[in-house]
Image 1: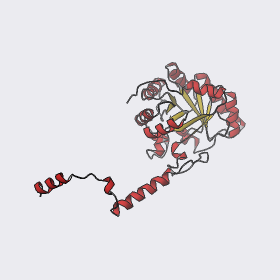
Image 2 (image 1 turned 135 degrees about the vertical axis):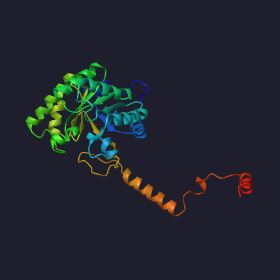
Image 3 (image 1 turned 45 degrees about the horizontal axis):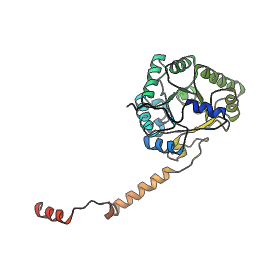
Image 4 (image 1 turned 180 degrees about the horizontal axis):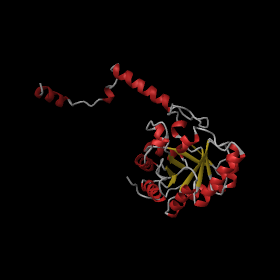
Amino acid sequence: MSVEAKLKDITVSTFQKKKQNNEKITMLTAYDCSTAKYFDEAGVDSILVGDSLGMVVLGYDSTTSVTMNEMKIFTSAVCRGAKRCLVVADMPFMSYHASVDEAVKNAGELIRCGASAVKLEGATSHILDVVQRCVESGIPVVGHLGFTPQYLNVLGGYKIQGKTAEKTRFILEQALRLQDAGAFCVVLEMVPEESAKLITDKLTIPTIGIGAGRYTDGQVLVADDILGKYSEFKPKFARRYANIGEIMYNAASSYINDVTSLSFPGEEELFQLSDEAKRDLMENLK
């Protein structure tokens, strides 16, 4: 499942330089080789192999059902398609909570699959220990604060975080601790724009927003949301750039119609015998 290690055109240093130069960082999720290839060639800075694949690809009700083996399979697929951008792999639910040693081992497995970094949620003392040990082991880490999907049951639903000064201060303190532990970037999800700006301005490492307004150092969105492929719901913060779902539906409908009306396959889609082979067939296989 491993891929050959190589230095990508976009590295963790690129993220830092973009923040210093006030250049926006672009990130999209991807879960398969062909999508990763198109996004990479389009020039995205980073691809996140998000555990959102549990919902948009595997049909789970939440991200908490995703396993390490599933993340390894999808990470490997994405890394085969992405040649230049930085690939970040999500650490799935309970893959980094039981012990620091197990967390580092699991993070290393995703790096072996070709990822350049891993992402994990929260900033408890245990998480900070995991971040520090990963970085010490040569594994770059992206933090994730604000709304953290793996804590959905604790948070009580899809709720905006950092809606008061006190709660914003709490997220800021978490972000500073992640920064001190060695994280090179922090995702801020579903945080009011003003709160996200304050946090971004206080950090020396970049912030990547998803539903966190205009002033984070970069943005990330889920591929199936921007492509119009995931129809269960559309987040307020996601902008749709295509409607692939409708294209897929229409293509399948046209195919079904062509097959049932006997217009597919047509002459141009057939393999046929030569005249000699047809005569031999008729004479010998009557």
